[in-house]
Length: 313
Image 1 (cartoon, rainbow, N blue to C red):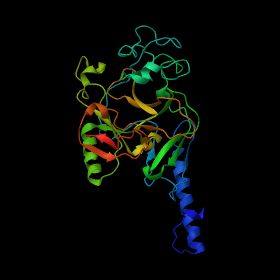
Image 2 (cartoon, helix red, strand yellow):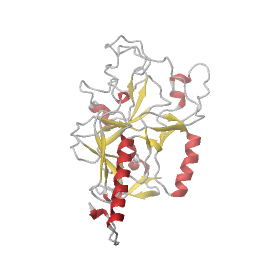
Image 3 (tube, helix red, strand yellow):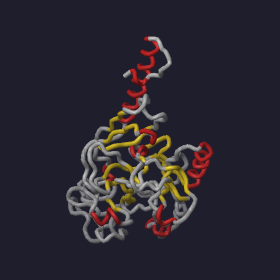
Image 4 (cartoon, rainbow, N blue to C red):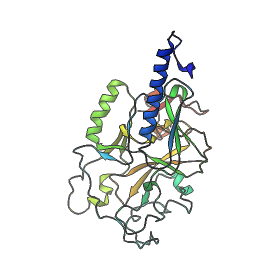
């Protein structure tokens, strides 16, 4: 597709080398995407000459703790419910849920309607539970179940779109990255702010430390530690989700085996989504509750209710 090339005169050999380089960069990006578990993540660009995003992270399938990060001890913690009968009344993994429907999913593994609109966390069983992997509480922690496509979206850069129709409440992807303490994240954030670069930092701040069931009894070394996930250099396809003032995705905190200090940020469809539709979430879901404050970063979502800016500080 020579329409990609610069209008500057080039020889056939130069044009051939340029095309070869573009194809090689695209091929390496596709190979990198193949590291992600689950259905295929493809890539396409019909907007510019870029064969892939300018910066390509290392794609990962779980949190990777930064060296020296203290972690809460979650070993051998889980429920003792029999196989295929979980959760029973008194299930360890469900006992801290404040939701009316403690099991968040229906028989189709879709998020129940009340969980789409509340702020309660989702509780799932974990690796050390006695119940089987088919336990009805497990959806988000089993991994991404849908194919996705990384696409170039005009002036908004790169984004992600649906490959197939999805019903409201479908789990789409988790936000994986490097796991670090808030102190380390603050240092990284200052560097990003000085470079005016995009930030991929996600604080795990939904729960107060005193609400953590593992903080009871003897003091833990991690008792006062709060965590952040950074997908700048290592992350999942979800790092490419763009902002929209009319999002079709919501973020839910997913707690595994009641471990509230290190939980998952999971994306679910908040309405039915058609194949080919870009997947977006609200980068500042508390925008309207913040009142009149300084705003930051112009919004280019183009929706009828666009608020013109992404963040209120």
